[in-house]
Length: 147
Ligand SMILES: CC(C)(COP(=O)(O)OP(=O)(O)OC[C@H]1O[C@@H](n2cnc3c(N)ncnc32)[C@H](O)[C@@H]1OP(=O)(O)O)[C@@H](O)C(=O)NCCC(=O)NCCS
Image 1 (cartoon, rainbow, N blue to C red):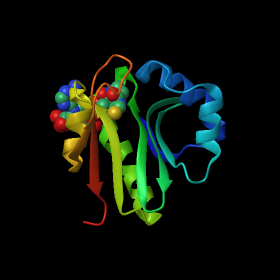
Image 2 (image 1 turned 60 degrees about the vertical axis):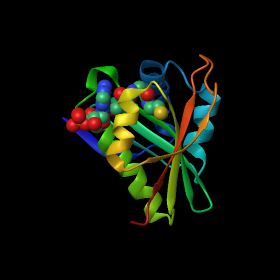
Image 3 (image 1 turned 90 degrees about the vertical axis):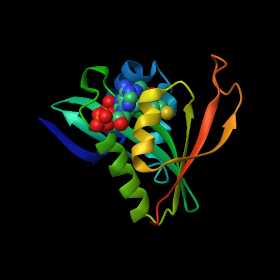
Image 4 (image 1 turned 135 degrees about the horizontal axis):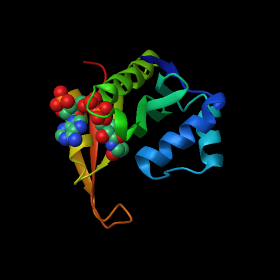
């Protein structure tokens, strides 16, 4: 049974590192994760299967904007609605903290993530050419949180 969504804290450091490796190939180092989990302006939420973190979403609150930095689901737990659940929880947390807009970057070829974000109503607002190490472009997307 999956439990949560629950706020992520420093005690979840090892679980975040592990899911980061499994789902994102190691986006952040241990010290970067420490900072993410300690800063009050960087909310994160997770879904758990027992002791294992199976989905997480994190962001930075900058004035009234939520900058989404991580959305990740354990490969074995995909296409079960967990990405949608954890992202909804992060957006709800941001709304509760007076954010009015959310933004993110997504690789043009990441069909799964683009499909997920489209469901929430994220709209393309620009493109960063060659943004990723692979040379792939990033789409900049925004969502109005007030409607
Ligand atoms: C993107 C990701 C978080 C989606 O998580 P998920 O739990 O599988 O997503 P959900 O089951 O909640 O899917 C919600 C909707 O997103 C879309 N979607 C999800 N995976 C998809 C896929 N592989 N292809 C097309 N659409 C997809 C669908 O519209 C889906 O609804 P449906 O299943 O009813 O058709 C997951 O694939 C992941 O962790 N990918 C690697 C990390 C990553 O790319 N993160 C985003 C960086 S910007």
